[in-house]
Length: 604
Image (cartoon, rainbow, N blue to C red):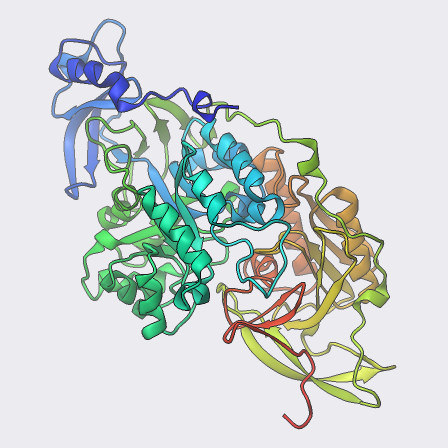
């Protein structure tokens, strides 16, 4: 399949003569919008009563009077004094986190005003390698909005600390840089590799830079000393892992774009936007993004419009917040001539709204075509024909039993001191805790908010299970929750207070081909089927969101009170974000990037 045939949208060079003719009044526009307050993010102005003329899906004229662009067949719409805002851009995100394929993700976010996305499909890369990336890339190009793909950089994310279904190397990056929809390199999560001069990581960055494309960053460490400077010298051009003002300031001072995120569970805007609102730094180097939003958030709360509203609620001027979600993003990826502003030659992506602060999205245009109105998507979002084997990716090798989740205590011990992964609400990092737990019949038992966690290998059917402990979810009944969404290696994470239910949950996901399941008191009480790679569903977003909401309610019924705890659950195996994680190779100390023992020696 030639991806160039998937998107019919013409390049500027193909229509330049017609754009010039329309702007000059020699040829009619396809669409003229009148009575608008046009938001010019390029100058941070609102132009009262301006008009725009669109031809071939691009802006031909933007100014006070487009009457000379109107012909007999021109469609004219009066916006009645409402604002016309550039379509919103998400600078860093993972489609798979929405539990949806690119087509269904697009259908979910179009009514919220997102018209451009920069996606890193490293989730599917860990399951199916370069082939999986190509499938995501191809479906992305089929959509009526702009979805650019960043070639994943780190599969595995931390070599030697986890095992993935497939691995990515410099030769894969070099090949992908030739694909039409590839915009750059996905987040370079292996920041210790870059800091320590890993030739593989530097080779991937070099291949990207040779192609003249953007290198995404991921520096998940609070250390802003020499290691941070070494990472920046390695080539990443942006970073979204900041959690405080100092992080945002440090990145911008070193020439990076600071991407500040509001996802389903990551609330990092408020702590970092003060670099603009209070310190007065230049906002051109700050970008809004979502990183990870599950389907429930997308359907019920929004996408980039939600992030913009939140930035405004945190004290940001609405026009500055809009810059951070439009022109700043476009400039960062070298697309300022294509998207991100209402100006001649650019793609006619725009939002109609009656209030810049509250930002109700009343209508959405993409490439000059009305694609949503009143919260309803008006266009088709074409699906790829996903190969049959992509729906059969959960391989346990055998049926699991309660015995697979037993944690043996040291011989003769009545209690044991263990390391515990501590979940932090609304944050990606975890805490490295310890707890003294009782021993019953030779097995260590969770208590007092500490429950068990297990990583079940699911790519090669080895039947291996790694066990540990986690706290912070608040589960207080016999329960288990399992997910084949387990960033980034995407084995299977099982958390529970009952070993038999943990086994039942794991076996259930093998049966349905992947997803998320919650069990309580001996029965399944929620299931979200994610058959494609064990990560995504091609069912309509509203259906997936309804099942996701039932999952959240099921977690609450088990005693969980955390905001969007599913996202916390899915990141417990992310071995590139401190402090303590679990992988198929064991418990990982992410502050030192090495495996560590679960049970502490009493002498320690």
